[in-house]
Image (cartoon, rainbow, N blue to C red):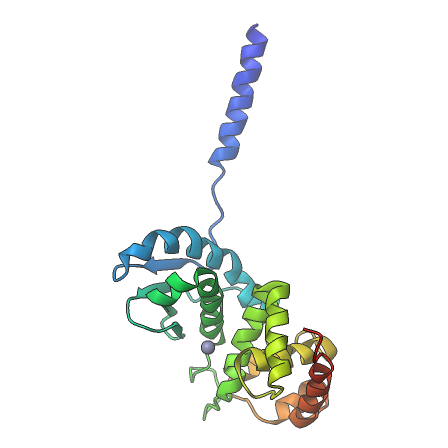
Length: 239
Ligand SMILES: [Zn+2]
């Protein structure tokens, strides 16, 4: 009898111990500011924040390489009552997510925040230790990289299908967003799995030039674009 009680007590203690195990601090902490949209506070704290915190480290790894550590502090995510979708300011690690968009498409809002966090990680701007004069990469490429993180990594197979289908309809490698993401993914899979990480580094340092494509793949951007368009064109009708 006594030993039964002791066993039960020990098991209970063991369970308590498991329950008391401290939660690991996420690599990137997202602080929600819902002061302007209090109706979305619950959703943002309980659904959006955990999703972003569980995925943010992957974004850092995809763009900065394996073993890269996040050292730029917490990200502030502001819920904005004005019309719009989402935006980011890299210098202050701030994302704005607009209320109506979050209400109409809560799943899409998560993906949009991943895209915006990718912009924060990209951080393409002059800073100490970067090139002077600083060369900004073209806008289509900046958006393509952020969407490559989102559609070809975060969103999984459905995201890849969606972005590639957009590319089939508009096979212009510099069309930005998902179409450019499809182009980058083609290069990453065919030439160099680290391609986007390497491209990101050059862009951040302010050293983007037309030569980077040849440096990493031995092909010009035009040659790569033709190859990719042919490959994508071959998928027509196979959506
Ligand atoms: Zn963007």
